[in-house]
Length: 580
Image (cartoon, rainbow, N blue to C red; front, side, top):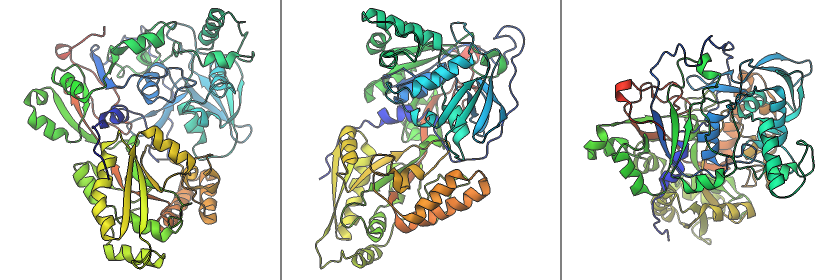
């Protein structure tokens, strides 16, 4: 039986709604390098300055840029306090210079020379140098440092050579269609001098020897104890003492990121970063969250039916507007099957089970029309999207015929399928609940096992599942290799289902090495045909983001990266707050 659980959906979407995620658009256009305007950083601003943007989020768990996999820390703090080498323009996903620009390619394959901006400085006033870049890479992949969420990307770097104070050379390990853009947009640059000093402080406090540099024994162990990201070069800064950062965050109800007056972006992008501060408000109760909405103490709010919230609450409608949109991080919901289990090893059984899910009911009913049926691994609207062939609800007679052909007919033992679902995701429970009748009609016994996400992951990693429900959030450059190549099974990648097919392996290997967009699209088409044939996972729906946003913000239109306050401003007479 499926037991109801208390609704906690907002804990997931608090981060996802404003996150940088990915879309499989492979064509990148380099913008001309942006040069700073003369004069003070805020001179010549083209929009009014002031006000703060308050986001309700769970409390961040780890602000160390080298160890963190925490989504609040990476997407809501480090994203704004620490620049990457290059970044993405959310309007068209073009790759544009950030701290650096690509100066040249070669002289060897997989090698690029990059140059840092002359005016790039950390929030403490020290210049950003090539030594900081090299340190940030080595710290992230240090053998004594547990890998954070970007380690797998930075592991693609085989070598990083400092050429001078502002120039360095990257060499990647192997060809990949998105290797360079993925590396340079994931590469968070931190201050080497600050981290060396902080590691020394921790060593002295513990009564141990002070490591001379990042190569000294014990440096990585001490680095993992740092609870602060140090000064960054981003448009905002973390105004928090390093010595007691963890304790302050644990006891506070918010985290304030004031604007960084030393950010190069303030002069180079005079139309951007107009707000005085970003404020993260820590909220853990749905009723408290809605109360903050009513009193305008938060500036956005996740709502599955934002139009209904506005219609039912005139006081909210007076100050907030609905935003329903597609962004790269929306991904899709899916059921991952264990191909090692009897019955599920047969693709006919997996296709039959796939046909029992009513995707239209999930999209139109459970998600209130804020989703589309998922028929391709790639999201609709991207060049890689394979059209409307594939997943869909099947007639019960068709399902029975497929099961009979696979030896699961009515005169045999009934097929029993257990699907794991995280208890904190109300939507997961409801998807399984509305699917029960069709499974019963087809003679399939569906058992839903609802448990906390940690238990789901433990069962998944041990291979103790028939299937599990998951929402997948893609990166910007979608590469199915880590999910469906046979080498990625057994804990090496995301192939938890144990899927293996020689032709699929060959297609995935060729596609990730193919630099030509047109030729790679042909390979993705073949990937889709094999995917439909084998049904390694069952795709359900592509959700859309739906929020309420305070109406005082001008320019607050979602782009492909979501709702990002890069180009927002508030007219002086409408400004509500100053950060405290």
